[in-house]
Amino acid sequence: MPTGIPREGVLLDIYRRAMLIKLADDRFISQLSGGELQIAYYSPRGQEIVSAATSANLNTEDYVVTIYRGLHDHLAKGVPLKQLWAEFAGKATGTCKGKGGPMHITHPESGVLVTTGIVGAGLPIANGLALASKLRGEKRVTVCNFGDGASNIGAFHEALNLASVWKLPVIFLCHNNLYAEHTPFQKGTAVDSIAKRAASYDMPGVRVSGNDALEMYETSRIAIDRARNGGGPTLIEAMTFRFRGHNYGDRGEYIPAEQYAAAIESDPVTRYRQWLVEHLSGDTSLNEIDETIRHDIDEAVTFMRTSPYPTEDELNRDVFSEEF
Ligand SMILES: Cc1ncc(C[n+]2csc(CCOP(=O)(O)OP(=O)(O)O)c2C)c(N)n1
Ligand SMILES: [Mg+2]
Figure 1 (spheres, rainbow, N blue to C red):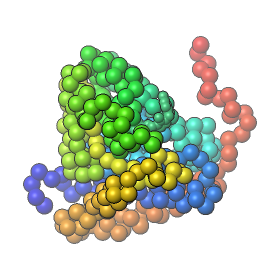
Figure 2 (cartoon, protein in one colour):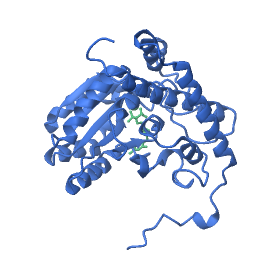
Figure 3 (cartoon, rainbow, N blue to C red):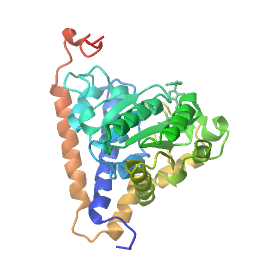
Figure 4 (cartoon, rainbow, N blue to C red):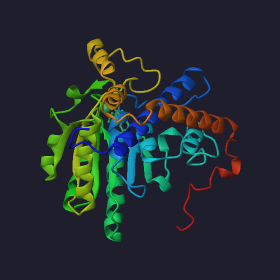
């Protein structure tokens, strides 16, 4: 193993998370195309490494905020597969008792607070979580995930400014997948790199390949350590690509064929697996890891199928606060 590379346990940890995301996504796609699930689905396929490598640096109590395209962030952070699957299907056993659905996965026990469908809305929420940790004197950090399109929303700029002023323990992690719905990155963004925007808010801004596990792990490690030790926020722009268009049903005709082919050709999960095969000591079977994940997914699907829908008396529960 060359020096400067994380130890084997960490490498496998990243692999496990990335493969779980890929295989879970494959299964969701087959359930959608087979008609078993009828939900709005925003696949993170192609962006697995961003979340898998970052989460390998996080503790359970650290917070993650994410968006509708959030399956990779949920699974990497440890949302239990069964509860996640049930929530996607609107079942009472889901993370939000079936009342949130795929766009609102929230699971405080694994630090996922919250998932939002409002572009840019997660950034001020992440600041709130980070401010709470800071005021309580906790060592928690908050990772805020969002897309390239979200960096053109006012809330992005307001949140980065305040996070810098208050030196909040937050990492702004932009998954730059080169498209916002059907608009290419360069058609809707004035700068050629979102990381450059960090300069306006006097914080470090780093552009990194989000498809390279080692680069992503190291860059997020530095930003997370910095936030945890009182150094304040960092903006990371992780370059990546989404393989399945904006949402399920989008055939991606607006994506140039060569760009799409090149992205698929360098599938980050396949590439990372290949790298591991060449560099691991040989004691660990990646096939065994894959098989365990497939088994866990089968169990989660069965759990979803056999779970009930919420009853009518759940309708107003957990919706209004009792205190006000
Ligand atoms: C405030 C707001 N404006 C517009 C939309 C519609 N919308 C949903 S997803 C999306 C694209 C966002 O792109 P990006 O931030 O790059 O994230 P990606 O989907 O690529 O992961 C838009 C405009 C929305 N949900 N919220
Ligand atoms: Mg995007």
